[in-house]
Every structure is written in C-alpha cells, then in structure tokens.
Length: 465
Ligand SMILES: *Cc1c(COP(=O)(O)O)cnc(C)c1O
Image (cartoon, rainbow, N blue to C red; front, side, top):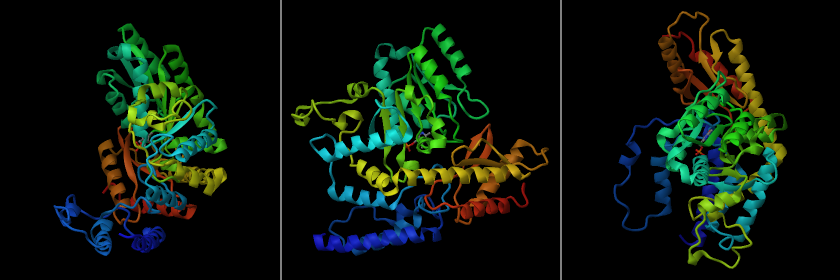
C-alpha cells in the first residue's frame, strides 16, 4: 500500500468509523452466530500473494462485522462498560501511525514524560496524595499481578508460609495474580462479605489470628472498591489498619469504580487508599479511554522497579540514572504509547466534562434502582451506589421456591436480551440469579434508561412461565 492509497483508504476508514458510531444503535448488540461459524467461512491457509484492500474490506463487511458484539451500542449495559470516545479513537490512530515502542525514555522521550504528567493528573483527579507514582499497564489483571509479584518479593524469604487475603467477591484476576506470583494456592484465602458484599474486617481478623497461630505469615490484603458482581466497597480504612498492624501489602482493586472518585461527592470511595501500597483504576472502563489503559499507582516505585527491572547491555543508555524507564515498571519490555489517549481525553472533556458524565451515570443508576425498589414485583439485589444496578424479579407472592424464582429471572433476562436491542449481563448474589444493568456510555440519557425499565417490566409479563 503506497502512501497515496493509504491516504485514500484512511479517509474511507474514518468515514466508516463515523458512520459506525452514528448508526451502531441499528445493529443487534449481540450477533446471531454459532461457535465456529466465522472461522469456517475463512480460508484455513494464508494467502500466498497480496490481496487488494478492497477485497479485504469487503470480507470484513461480509464475514467479520456481522459476528461482532457491539460494545459501542447504546443498548450495551452488560459487564462493565469499555467506554471510549472520539478523541481517544483519534489518539489510537496516531499511536498506530507512529508505531513507537515506549519501553524506555530514550526510545520515546516525549511518551515517557507525557505518561508521567498525565498519570500525575489522574492521581490528582482521584484524590490520591502526592508521593504515589503512576504507570499505565495494559489491563487491571496485569496491574494486580504486578502488585502480587512486588508483594511476593517483600516476603520472598517466607513465601511458602505467606498468606493472601481477598474477599469472596473479589475479581477472579486477584486470586489468579496471587497464584501466578507464586503464592501457594491453598494460602489464598477468601474472606466472607457482609450483606452489602463488602469484605468483613472481623472475619479477616479471625482468619489472620488462626493463620498466625498456625505459624503462617499474613502477606497481602487485596481490597476491592466496586466489586464486579455488585460494586461492593471493602472498608479500606479498617483494612489499612490491619495491614499496618500485620505488615501486609495492601493492594486496592478499583478497576471500575475508582473512576467515580473524580466526582467530589463520591470521593469518599477512596477513603484509606492513601495508606495502600498499590491501586489500580481502569480509564478504559469508565473514563472514555479506549482499552487498553489501566492506571497503576504505587507508593514505593523503588520496590516496583526492584521486582521488574532488567538492564541488559543493549538497553543501557547514558540517561538511565536521571530518567524513568517504564520498561522497569511492568512485565513486558515493549510498551504502546497509551498516555496519548489519556492526554487527548482529559483535555478534550476536561475534568468537569468527565465528572459530569460519571455524575449523570450515577444519578441514572439511582433512578433505575428507585424504580426497582418501588415496584412490588421487583427487588434490588444490592445497593447501587455507582451506576451498576443489580435486580431481580421477586413477586409480592413470596411463596415461590428459590429454584422457580431463579428460572424466572433467567427467563426474564433472556427475554430482555432476545430482540437484540439491549444487552444486560447477570451474576449470582447470595446464591440467587441476578440481572445487572451497568451504565457507562457517554450518550446514555434518562429517556433510554426509562425505556430499559419499560422493557424489563414488559419482559416480566406472565412470569414465572
Ligand atoms: C474489570 C475488572 C477487573 C479486570 O479488568 P481487566 O482490565 O479486564 O483486567 C478487575 N477487577 C475489577 C474490580 C474489575 O471490575
């Protein structure tokens, strides 16, 4: 592809992108396709010679697009959002055009320094104190793995007796990170939660006492701010006290809900995080940055680089004593120029624009939760403090057995999603099937949320059939 064809095709792709974002609401959110269908339609062997870009684009339209799930669809309310935005998409295009590898200062000086600056902006936005240093990792799972590895190195001498504590509601990446870091799987303890799905400090203290009595060493407490099932908030101030008393590493997983801390009246969610050793917040979930972009903050960067640094001769430069080399702050050597996305987004919307978006999502979540609570055939399955609503069909007639209710809620959920206009996901809370509505699109407004509630009520007609 020569430069003139690149320019032509590039303009056509941008036109496609703009039309996609304008019209995606007309697609089914989730495609109708069978496992294996796309792969079967593609040649099993690579093309021996070059193919025209026209043919490739036509095959994209014909074979790939129809089997995509549209996360950018306004009716996508599943999981947590991967919200993103035009300025971030433009940044991605420029990052791709430059193709820079930002592994060290020397390999991309401006990328390194921009990352230092925008991560400090983000630190201020979420109210972390000075002294915390930030680095962009790809995903929260990686940030948490990096935290576990750094914590492991602090307890290296007693690794076979070191215990990691997380709640039963913690994201699966936390226990996985602990195992991958080399903590013994049988010493990764799941602490029970209270009725708000927050880790119980009393239960944690009991577990620690029992472990101490058995000669084990409490090593890591992993708290979650905004659990994946229901946005439960672990009591970080109490956990920070325990971590300090026991000499534990305190990691805070705020992958989704941490973004809400930019809203002044929601800043409370970060209480106690100033005493954490490490914190992860994903701008690729709720701050309009395309994934991947996971913000990882640490209180002691020297501990991080001790665990992560490599200095082979071919990477040494004369600047190494005076600059940050982000290759020493994470697992891969190569690094994309992710800071550019964060910079474009924060400047395009301003802190006020981003704050207004999250404030509105939280308000709409509260509103939906209020409708659920006011309806005698529905119940809230968990508090809905930050734009995620967990609810169930629960008719006034309380005599229905739990398995009938579970089946009815599964039917309700299938009916909501079947037409393809909306996509909600589910979880299990307190052992019961629960439907989740996760708000997160920049464009989500009250009319749409009202429409969703209308569809939910329609889908409940005739249950438990
Ligand atoms: C989404 C989520 C994760 C995983 O995030 P990735 O960036 O996909 O790895 C971890 N923890 C919590 C609380 C999450 O919501």
